Length: 250
Image 1 (cartoon, rainbow, N blue to C red):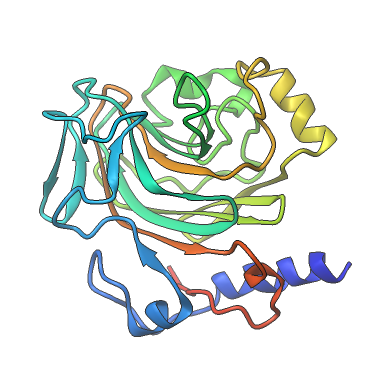
Image 2 (cartoon, helix red, strand yellow):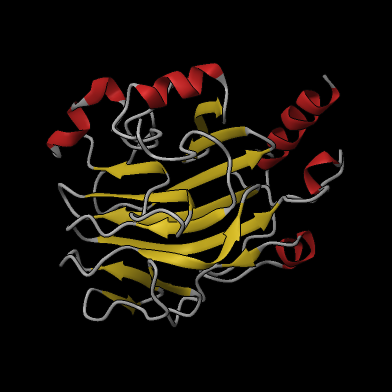
């Protein structure tokens, strides 16, 4: 019970008012002290590459005005150099009208395809796929596995959204614009049953927590990312009552 109580306290800290705002694609002094790391510097594609390759895809991703922009021409997904299994991940994003994209985690190159647990990002109003799978493909869903349990406060295409994924132990939470909309436990009977009912039923280790890359999806539509930052919670960090997290109000 103590660990579960710890999780509740730690997550509550994530939602507390925060006064140390930083410029786009920069860490505040409080964030640096807490141990947050930028995954995108706002100027280059350093730290990202194609799945199972050492190179970055050409012609479909660029950096413009502090955004990492996917042009949607089918150049391919990109993955982080680093791998993580317990973490707090935050990013800002916007997409074109009718857009469809996502951020995946627990992505391992031991699989043939770039699969992982996906935080869905989609135009819920106009993209037909958002109407499928009984809510399991709307924004902030665990794509094709779990629908949000709270209506996601999604902004219209072209407007900036803020998303967060928190993984502490086997407990996972999806947040959108300051609101927790979904939580589940890796490897639990409920999760494994939902995976068995999904398109990922034959994917090895799917539904469990594994160490893997963060993936930004190219789903043949335009999407922009910035302020991509991560706090590694592996080791003993997640067991500390006074762990230093970045808190933000919206």
